[in-house]
Image (cartoon, rainbow, N blue to C red; front, side, top):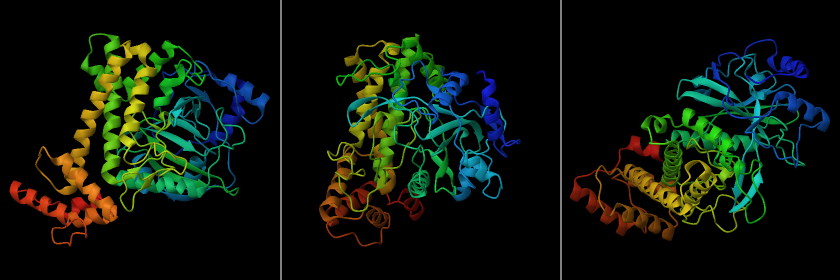
Length: 465
């Protein structure tokens, strides 16, 4: 258990409000087993710096820094997702929900200990060094009816030790509302994703979101120990293999127990299989995005979750008219993270993950990259074709299925077909096929007739569209 210094007690009293946060069943501290700074270190630094900002200071040897949310005035519930709230034991009808969701009153459970997490990132191909949670705080892990257990995080809760100079650690309602809609849509479509529970708004106009995930650790968490990159930037814990091992042990225990259960011959083999397991989950995730026409927009290593869930939805977008080179982020001028290149970007990030963890798996990088590529490509093809066959209502498997799907998308782009409407039409055998897709539709109908397969039912089409 981390020690608390005497100076932190007053702040703790404010946060607890003298009562427990209702309904939440805290089961673990999100930072248990991970190395972090002591509260006393933070309190001293914050009193010296005033604004709880360690701008320009590398946080070495630590995955988190304890930090309390900054209160907002008279918070009110702006929007919420009833399903997510119920799954973690909360209700929009509870008069304390706004106080909890704002971070003003977090309750007294010892497993609820706010902290900002440290991580690095490759951003648009270049290593950026230390980044960290500049506007978010992880609180702890609670029981979750839907998933068994989930980590709770506040986003927009004020400055943290990683907030960049000139920023406030705050968010506005329109930005968080967009993320809530994106998360709800992806969840309903069956895509693994972080889930938004609620957004509250204070009198100052600040908005805070409660979101849930299996974990908020990122690929960039493992990059904390990176050696200097060609641009001279390095991880704040350069070469710290002991830190990497603590992170890997945590990830194995909480997110990939099946890798431990498989019983590799040695520790290096366990870490190698962990990287490959993360690679496969990532491949399945990006395949799911491709199947629903969603583009993330910012596929940096600090935006990819180690748990295989969609993370950081702010720049994401669903396509309307289909374009292979559709870009969701206006900053992505080169199209690095376009619809066409999303799988490539995610596979490259898995390579970077393997490189960051070489001190654990100890395999020559050429060999490990080959393993990563093979694992990613096989899982992506499987997940992508399964998803597209479901969308097309195909029960069988045929060697030409990948080509058939690619030809459909080529035809859709050529005629400017609407993504959603096209899939609705194809799911309805009686609907008129859009102009320009007739030739492909004839081959598709022949496939159905020859194989005795049927187009998907309306219920399936509604979910997959």
